[in-house]
Length: 359
Image 1 (cartoon, helix red, strand yellow):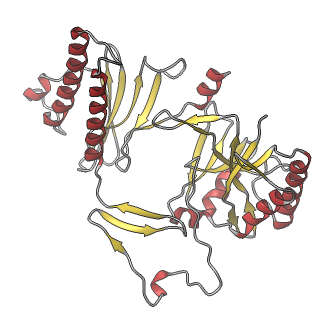
Image 2 (cartoon, rainbow, N blue to C red):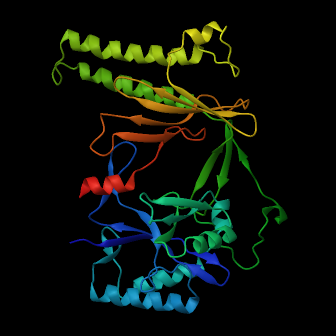
């Protein structure tokens, strides 16, 4: 039997009205994390039944929504749950919804605590997310997409950092307190963003160190395959494995030693040794340029996009589109972007392709 699990709520306060955003998912549906592990489905959407299509509600309308959902929960005991192992008791689901108004915060409050509010447009061939940073931007985007099938969500489908609840007499500015402390570490600061979590904020990237340690760990795991009691490889296969690894290491090392100039000259010897890949350059108004390079690789053909600028923090490709034959049907084409504050590549997720491939 399938049940709808309501994990969390994060109501958005817009003047005297509310956008009841809840985090929920089916008990029979699962996602996969970055390590390929199966995890419960979770996503944010507006709890607007029976006013389907609307985003903003008054306190009186929220009372009506809570009553409708509580009645549905009473008639279908066990169909609505607070966790995988616990159902809402009679009257509990309605109270849970109404409590969201007391803990509602503005878009600006959520943004201060590291969250990104989005408006999701379902009327596109693929779901399009529009990020908003202020209440005014949120209202403008809802008005702009009027008539579309939309919802209000958060960028992180699974979690949100709730701003702390302020009691009467609590100052808004911590600088007005008699004393306050900031803990500084060797690589950043400890920041208390909620009553239950302390976050560590780095002020320097350690992407290379993290990736090297991850590679070392994977190489050691590869060494475990040498156990003859479990695995059997011929000498030719072993040579092929390590020859492939050495080849990839050599390619990566060459990318560190090869230097590119911002200006091109036919007399430069360094360009004579580069592969002759098709390239398109688009000049930008600020004097920089976007450069698209088509990599005609036998196994993984791709298009890399570079931003040729004088900014030292931007080096190498900023995004790419790649054909990966190792992926499943309808997932061979991968679109990814590199972000300096994230260790792993951020991939565009083709929702419609996944949905069609699962049908």
